Image (cartoon, rainbow, N blue to C red; front, side, top):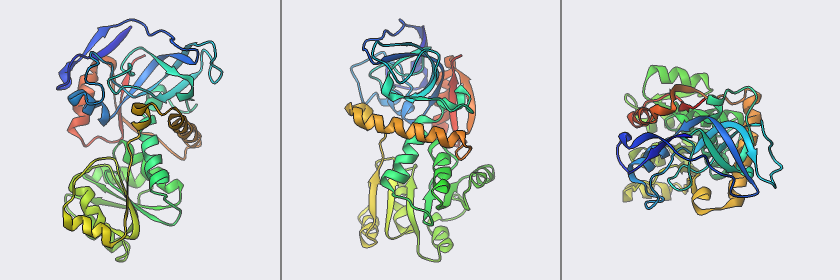
Length: 333
């Protein structure tokens, strides 16, 4: 089958097309999926550059997000059958083969039926972004109706799903953006306040918008100074959830302490990396709940660019350049 191999860590050029053997069904609960599309995420570019999870396993096939059609099933599989259209989050961290390929083998418990109103390309863009936003806002952030959320980089892959999910929870949303195009985009998703961080201090703007109280929850998808500054934009006993690891100075940390803030982290790849089957089943449940919201039109996925599988390196360049609206997807079929 055709696949994109990472033969060594490095620049996007290390991603090269190759012919590799078709994956076998190794276990009774395995399912072979003929992939139609693979989502591209920032984690893919980080693994490509550093190969930090499985440094001794090269070459590898990246790509955590996939969508396709069930082709074959193991002897004990009951959740899906041949011909089912599915989408999923699985592998792609440099260990077991990921989804930059024509076929993938996935345990049946990690597959969800594709929303009927989504194309394969759209479905492949969903899993990591949806699960991350869900875990951040609901699991860690405990966001409730009538509360106020500040979502950084709201036009991005996770951010644009998080805005819609927050609105579904009946929370009010402010978000940071960097262009008029992105401002219009996030407002179309339900954000009440779009803060252009190039021209305005997001802390001052958020405090003014909340009459000095601050937001209940900040979702940090950017890291660095954005994370540390967010403490000052959150009301007492509020919460901040980050997708990244950032070191803040003592003064900033003291702001968080004085405000009695709760600080949480989301690394949705942890269950995959540590082999936590039950936690991965919970993530599949999030996909299934999200599928219903997508079919009802409550959530929408925005794909800004679709590229052929052979242009995986270009997809990585676009991700690393930043400023992308929504998601980038590789079309395989």
